[in-house]
Length: 289
Image 1 (cartoon, helix red, strand yellow):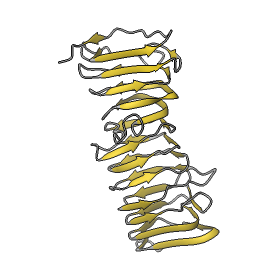
Image 2 (cartoon, one colour):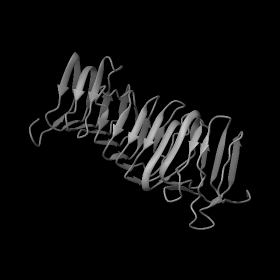
Image 3 (cartoon, rainbow, N blue to C red):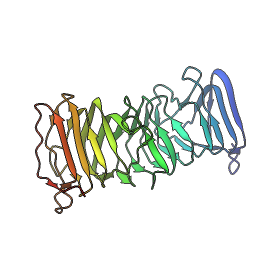
Image 4 (cartoon, rainbow, N blue to C red):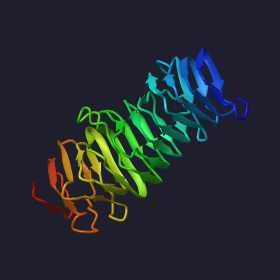
């Protein structure tokens, strides 16, 4: 595209088995329609600002990313899922800013900046890995929609704003089956309740989890941080942790509460329903009002 004129009103791709490779940045302000064929971002930035109709399956079409490719979606409506090309299921930066829902059809790794201002990112049954700077929405106007079979790995270099999960179907849309937090020196603050689903794994290697008056439910195998210097849980008189699943899995390491004050090592409620498992930590409990 000519420098200074890298914008199209509409773009339609319907070339079965063919690849459209971007040679420069491209913004589609109207209808972006990918019926068949592959779009290779090729180290550029693809911006979708109007309506986006993605391929109905990976066999029909996909998007080829890379460690230098960027995707910005502020679409007013999104049809079908985002299928990333096998072997190239990565982006440098991913920006979401709209009222629509972007659903992952394949795994996706974001190595640079993940910025979600509004809208819904639905994980479906896929894996989302965030390895760079993460900016979640400032309110529940933007959410992550989980499922009982998705994976979310948060290996962020920075985390801005709380994590808001979709609460439409409690226990499902606010659930992650396999959850990993490995963000040294960073704090993940819950914007609402989060469930680590039965049969999965919850792995907390590095970083602080600020419960922020919400409930964290852990129903699968649990691996807490190995030392308080690596990671802890910041509680409050309104925060709760529920460890359930009965015989659902192991508990590795101790539950380490942030010891900054009598408030940070406090919980409103702690539920432990895990046969033959041991939980260790100093916690202050507050009466329910």
